[in-house]
Amino acid sequence: MTTGTGQVKPADVWRAADDAKKFLDQAAIVLASVKTELDDMLRVTTGSHVLDVGCGTGADVRAIAQRVGPGGRVVGIDSSEQLIAQATPAGPGAAEVEFLHGEAGSLPFAADTFDAARAERVIEHVPDPAAAVAEMLRVVKPGGQVLITDPDHGLWAPDLTDRDLTRRIMTWWGEHVPNAWVARQLRRLLIEAGAVDVTVKLLPVALTSLAAADALTWVGKAAAAAAAQGIAEETRALGWGEEIQRRDAQGTFLMLGTFVVVSGTKK
Image 1 (cartoon, rainbow, N blue to C red):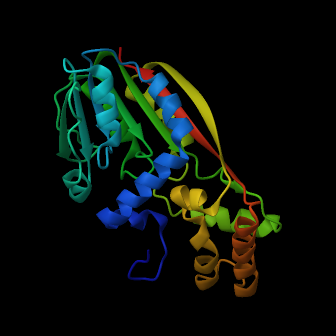
Image 2 (cartoon, rainbow, N blue to C red; image 1 turned 45 degrees about the vertical axis):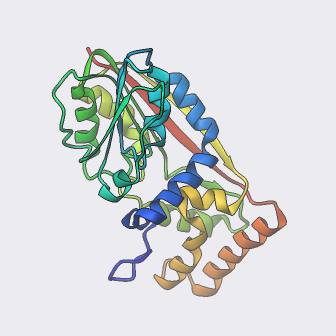
């Protein structure tokens, strides 16, 4: 989880497919209630054609394929060839599925191809969020839906004693995500891309273990990284990290966060 310059970056987990799969699997468990909300908001029916941008190993592709049935089609696209290689078919009674390697900012589909396109915890990582959102809107049919959710990395709030240090480290740590504040920008990006009937929904998450918090933020590594990189005085930073470990061991750990879900329709 370090670069050649010694900088620790949470997103570096995506460099190794096996680690990324473990990360995705743990995050899926933590975010089960968020996924239920997203499923309810996705406007698909039997026979729908759906695109999942940033599909990883395809868990959501397979679930949607069961929803739309054998008359439908579900395509997953991801920038990681290693994750795509681990994707598996949906099984009997499901829609045809296809997994492709590609970039969110340049989708390899004609305009007006899909009834819906979704992206979950993806736009925070892409090089050009505006291009990715615009591409998702381009490839859905008129009347089709674009559904996107990301956490706002400026809103993670752990319960820790040192408020000043908590603000400092969490702000610095969140900025290691390529697009840390993109969740609050999604509504604007969809509108600017030409979507109509754009809605916003906030989904709170309460993380009550360090394992859960690490699945989304790797906050357990933040104290040592902050000390090593001079973000805070070493003793104080390491004490902050020890409090995280202590609260987790005592069963009193809590970190709050917010996912922003934005839905828009193509004219």
